[in-house]
Length: 389
Image: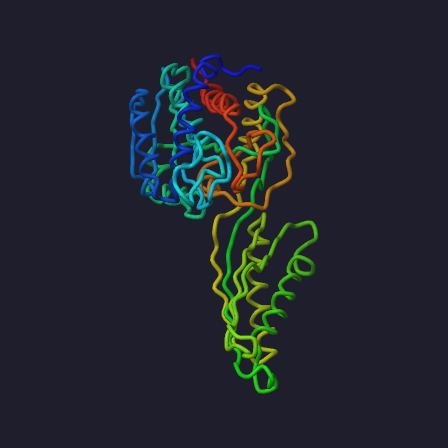
């Protein structure tokens, strides 16, 4: 396989970085140790500029090619944060921090982009500028968006941007990508229902928020089955129901918490509007009061068609002609790289992690055998997208 020779030589070093990150996981924006190591290594590689503190704890490295006749700037992004999960592996590099682990492979993402930065800073065999972006708080904190608010794209003149995530179930050395919607928008809602509490033996004197909650939960499922086009994707899940504390008391209030996943802005709007209407009218029918707190989270991860074709072409150069699935179904999970794709054209690809536990599982571990493919992909995106003249 045409993995870059120099990248293959770096494999053990990259694996050592990755395992150190794995042993020392950090959450959300509190990635000071990880960001500090990233900063130190980027400077030691000879990056032309290293900037810290974007999006609170993000780090950016700038690597200029041998020439810059094109004036082009390509951004490559990795995430650094871990998850609040107790690790259930017996690997030598198991997390040293109770209740925290790299269960999504961001340790591998960070190490791979560091490997690419080292290679690109050594060779500089391209015409333009590569910007390596290490962001905090992908796991629910919107760290990518915080970096954008700090002027990431404008400050470094990024023209296009690319992201990568490991994917268990895809063989090592293979990739998966699709144009358009790659991952879903992720919103959350809190529904508060106020009825009239009282004795459970006298329900006729009460307005029972528990019964009303059951009606609301059932009615919300009609958004997918009766409101959205059957060819559109939408998931509405009520995941928490809180009401009452005693077996013989009808409570005064009930609270429902849930999430909505969609693959287009139009269906996203539809889902929010229908939730509000269903809650208001079902509760009114029973004489209860209700409110909906709807929080829009990460938007749809939308791949630019031309950049998707380009990224797939480069991935084939790394893994082989049959190594890229360009028709993978969208995932209903979410990713805050979506914010970057709203500001600049680019694409997001999955890297095979082999037959491992799934991401966000306590037995998950990033597969170091995948790193040479990921690092080579990053390097070739820069060298192919900004060829030396």
